[in-house]
Structures are given as C-alpha cells and as structure tokens.
Image (cartoon, rainbow, N blue to C red; front, side):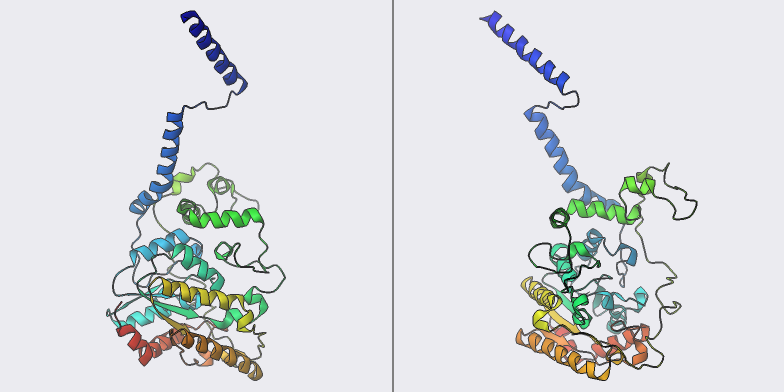
Length: 396
C-alpha cells in the first residue's frame, strides 16, 4: 500500500514538473496564495488612494477653483468637495460662467460674493471649465456625492440650448469637452459616437475610484500621459528632444499640485482676452434655439435639479444673465420665450430662482461670460436680491 502511494506521489510530482516545463511562465499558486494575492491587490486599490490624500498636501484657499489645466481631474474635484463641508459653505455649481473664463480666481462670481458676505457665509466655486448640463449632471452624480444636505446654487446657462450643435442633438459627430462625464448608455446623444469598449471603460471608471486616482497622477505629474508615454514624449520642437527619456516617472511625483499661474496670459485684467465682445455693441448673432421639449441639455439640467433635491439640498437656481446684446433684435424674442419657459418649470417644481438683470454690453466677453466688473455687479445685485437673501437666511 505504501509503495502504491509512493508511486502515485511520484507520478503527480512528475506531472507537475512536466506542466511547469510546458508552461515556463505560468504561476502555479495554491488557494491560500491566490487569496493572499487578491487581498494584497484589493488593499492597494482601496487603501492607496486614501493614503495618498494624507501624503499629498492640499489646503485650498477660500476662492480656490480647479485650475484650467486640471479640469479633468475629477478625483481632485471630489477631494475639494470633501474638504469643504463646513456649515457656512454654500456651493456654487456650474460651467465656465461660474468658473470664470476671462477672469482670475479672485474675480469670479463666488469671489465677489465672498466680499459681500464678509465672512458671514463662504461661497465655494465648485464649477469646472468646459462643462455643460449633460457633463455637469455626470460630474455631480459620480464625483459630487458630498453635495448633499447643504445649500447649493446651480447656474443655468441657456447657451447650451442655442443650437443643435451646442445641444449635442445634431446627428453629425462632434468632439467636445468632458466626454467621459456624459451618459454612456442610458441617454442617446446623436453627436456622441464613442465605441462600445470606450463607453464601457468610461462607465466602469466612474464606479472605481482607483482609476480616477490614477488619472489624477497622470494629470498632475505626467502632463496628462501615462508613465510610458510621458517617458517617450518629445519637447514639441524641431529637431525634437526627449527630456524625460532618462527620468524615472516617480521621481517627479513630489506632492506639489498644479496651481493657477500668478500671471495668466489668458485671464485677468492684463490678458488680451479680457475685453468686451464688441466695441460697437451691435448684435448680429442669430441663434438657432432648440425648443426645450427637444433639448438634451435642458433634460439633463432638469435631472440635475432633481438629483440635488433628492440628496436633501436646499437648491436655488441662478438664471443667466445671457448677453442679449449680441443677438439681433428678432432673435431676442425666441430667447425670452425659452427663458420664460425655464422660469415656469422652476416655479412648477417650487425651486427658488434668481434671474439677475442684463449687464451693460461692455461687461460681457462673449455670449455668456462676464468680465471682471460684470462679475462684481452680478455679486452685488444677487447679494441685494430679496429672494436670494431670504433663501440664504434659511439654515440647512
């Protein structure tokens, strides 16, 4: 009997050695070893991003906004929200109008509201450059879970209903900002033609914070590239040079986050872009307004309002003010009709709203973005608005 068992063991060992020879690169792990590997992997996936937050210093100032270069760093956006959960914080959610396309961080709408509040309240700029309702909905849904049980200001920019192109409802394929944030499956967007594997990857990425953290590293330290691509990147000149060829990617990970430049050539009073949309102020633009019932962007905005309310937020919508000066006189009538429809819908849902008056033509940089003095006037106007003050006074 012992001889039979011995022969059987030798036979099994021989079979194992033959399998190892036939599969020289295979890992033959026991069940216990596989469990240890899985536990180690899950520990890295779930604990490393948490540990990273403790190591990487981030202490945002009152008027902090996500820098333009890091607009797609949604992990950092979520981190900002987590740090700003004080009782006096009021979150201002929106697109580049709230973010401040032509102005510096201390000259945005929320920054001037902080001047008015003088410490009584703290208005937090949680907008991103390049957003629109379809993407804003995704941002709040997937990375704005901390926007709950608080006071939230939501900006409504009717620019996104000004044409089928802006609405993303035209059949022609378009390249647009923040494509990872738009609905990948449950809303049909004619202008969005991503492949199935791309859509799946983006949908899964929203559910796995580890992937958002990896993207955070790429944006903050490796010029929005993976380590391999960063190592091979040239300097953009001719003849090309390869400054990172002999640099270990981890050597540049120093914990210093990208910040806004002290002198931004694209924003601020010294910028050549910071100027009125027209010296004459005579409107010639004719927008091809999309009816609200057909608008994908408006439907996304409605869902976003519902989502914020379902999370227990005290919501107020700030409507415009859109630059009507830029339009032809007959085109303004269509705009006003759509604006009135928006107001009626907000009233039907008992959503508080404020609609600031139209600014002087010289205070707009384009169809929807004010300049520095325009933001100052909007903040003063909103601060003195009785409906807004009443909304502010209700504790949350």
